[in-house]
Length: 184
Image (cartoon, rainbow, N blue to C red):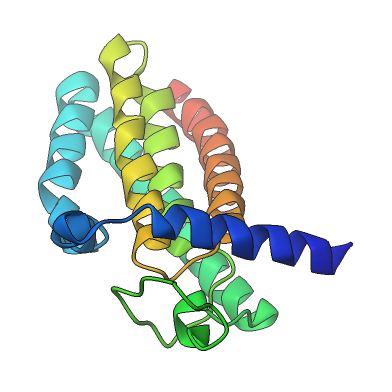
């Protein structure tokens, strides 16, 4: 059963990664870098303080950072514990894999997916009553996560697991944040 899931995962990776075309490589290489999203993070911060004010905004900001940190550290320790080799480091096994990025860390689960979905889900939950357009924020983690398959460093299951973990962390921190904000 596990072998069959791994085969399906590998085949899906090869299919999705194979959709890439050279003319789009620079875009996806840019998108996969965390620093390319700094303007978006600044925008998120401005929205938090704009809608919540300084006192409550600071708390929402802190909970956003805490959700990110928990997702980041949980991802890090899970990668070490699971020890799944990245597909980009197994190119000899995967003929046809387009590798645009290399990483020495392990693959399972995606930190890009877990952290971006933790941040985005938390912010959407926190800001949805102020502006319905916040649901568009999910474009960021979708693009950011898919970029990891495009550049050849994650299996689809790495992304899916990261999304699930990120959303669960966001839900937990949102509930804690909601209770904390009621005290103000």
